[in-house]
Image (cartoon, rainbow, N blue to C red; front, side):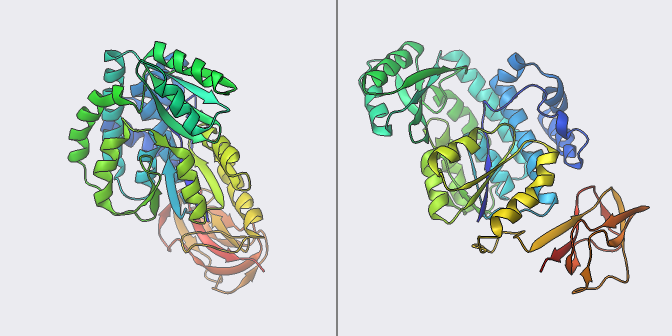
Length: 391
């Protein structure tokens, strides 16, 4: 079973949009810029590390690029049975699952970034990763400190993030090392996220959340707050309101996905942090990271090699070892070859039709199961055109 994962703040890097600027999915960037009233393309292509580090910039750019990558993956026909996102990534997961409209999500993410930036400016806070210590021992380390410090992220076995007042975080890190932690590593962030320090941001964001329409999910989403599966629209108002001041239960999220039958975890968006956390938590799981259009091109082969030994486990899982999609080589109007019929055996290189003046050639041999584009339909480059089944 395939699940998509979406990264949160901290995965951004300068120029991360550059590989995508000529891809058809880049059109989402212009739409996001119009909704947010900001030049998202400039941030994705030209902003330096310090500019991207600002919460209001890192959240918006990470979300938009994750949606560009998601759109690119779905264009080649890969679908997920479920979704999960880390912190900010939860908004990406909800958009991908159909719970949020893209424009509504852009507005929420923009407001969330601004609200968290303001809260961080108001209250000095920081975060640190505690490595090599059990979750309950990290809780104890925080409890033994007089100042304000809490667990913010349960990321993976032996990797827990704490947050709060800088002095208290440093003291809790020292206690954690006394309890057996290998290391307490300060994180380059500008606030104590997912702690009570974010209460002003939560109160501000609540107004925007209350004005947003949520829909039932097309596929399930696992929430940060409780690490549980949710698919009903009515759940998300409270869950998102609680998220800013509650720890991210990512380790629990991964175990929920695992017990739900997930076998292949695809990170959709910048970086590879979540792929690494899957490796630490679910050692036998298949992990795939999509950072560039070339990664999308290789995705079908990756899934095919996995699926060759794994039978389908979920109705929503597509593209197994015996199935392949033929995608459009260009943008334009599609005209199928009238000689191609369902069930017909074709060889690699067979022309299935044209897009404008460009021939649509199959990269695979197999039996034609049907066309996914209609005659006269205007298609984009990489859009699925036909579906094959291989012997």
